[in-house]
Image (cartoon, rainbow, N blue to C red; front, side, top):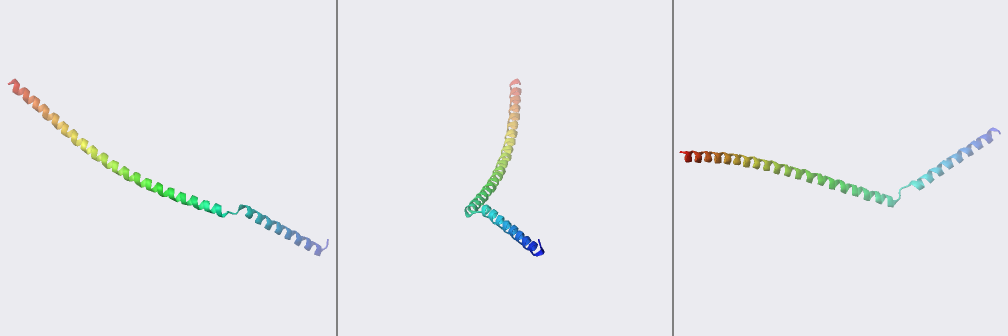
Length: 108
């Protein structure tokens, strides 16, 4: 094999390798490309995800507001309970004083 034949064979082999590589690339992208239907489905999924995140954020805000309302109601109820307990304590003390006064009046 002389030099010219060697160059021709090498060039042919390189061209065939290039052609096979290009064909494999084209074939791979032909089977793996994303279709318009898939893009539409991805867009719908993204929109659904966005709506779900908005709903979650609204639910979190609602829960926080409700928790604040319930906390204020609890503190108000506890204050009313303390006032009622103090009133009951005062009424019991007054009733005890009246009983002792009546007993003293009946004894004398």
